[in-house]
Image (cartoon, rainbow over all chains, first blue to last red; front, side, top):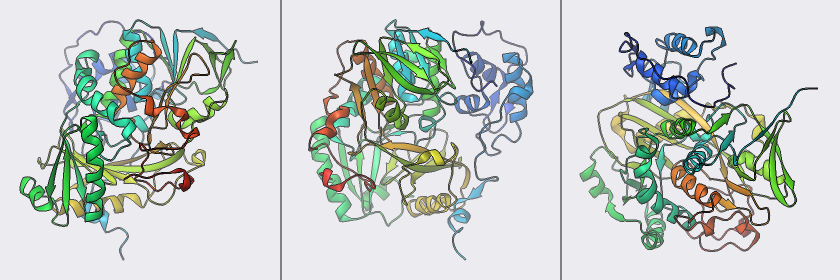
Length: 107
Length: 400
């Protein structure tokens, strides 16, 4: 359960990696290095990384990148991927136009 | 028997929202040892689910000095102090007015606001559309307030946390405080539902709605009720306007081009919010919010909503926050009942609370925001935009 992990002190110094400029979230153009840096700044859950950096907040809502973010987080924290909880799911499932959304209550 | 533990600090902060985190950061900057206790996941309630703005028009008078102090003295320095870009921009705000009655109420507020140091510009609907042509021609008038601003609540709340972590603040999620303990008339410890004891000579209760139960354990009451609002965000769109726009709703086009738009549920308050799950959402809000935004900007019909969310506010009887120290219990401080205004004032409240707790000179007047003001008759700083559902209306003297 990484969700309730205590937060005290900072992680060891951030060490850059050769593939840090790889784009992980295409919608928001966020790189692996930025995600690793955010984890070093104290973002230890999927929700925290999403909120702090915005991966998964673009048009696809994380359908592409969340699995990669999860692996990066597990590696940095040194825990199995199975212990990482998903982000909170949010409506709508697919993007919907304001026009269509506003018609929902009509016959 | 489960093993419990005891831990000590200079200050215990209960609640890791924007208020708790900003206060903890400013206290750590003063060199104090701080522990932040959070009942659920770190920083995951209203502080990261709000409308991302500092709206000041038609707020209670008591909050205005805090708003002006924040706009001039605190928010502009936050990025440098924390090392984190919180996307704070003093864009100014437009209060959108649909009829003469609304206009008169807003003009009445202006008189009070000007005295507190706010700056306004009044414009007709036509003048507004000359500046921002995409606004609907249904709009009657608008009032611009220069001090209104926006920031990214996710960056603010987690940014103060991250900056505090580097200064040695400890954050413990999953530690729900059950009650406070006193020793020789002073506050001495916060005890969690699991029996863990956190001892400190000073305790700040910043758990918003949850504060009431915690404070009741030492005989202090903070009247408030729960209120639920929902928001959605669209895809990124070409730039239409910079200012936040507000009414009974709140909207803005954020720095990256998305439109954020939210409002209250309009049906009822939720005295028993324990019945609702943490991520509760209704099915009726997105359609009515979408109608609301389209009424204002008809050109957005084809814009797509990508995400929506909801959050709980804690509304005090006069729709203003309760902050400060509890005089009769040395060491006890509170900051709660933010009535949906907490995020916009989170940095100034954190700064001021840290000054109160560290017993330093306080940057602005917060005497109107005392928690015990409801014990006396309410006066001029009282107002409400919302229906005061479960508040005795005889108690209210509504000014605007």
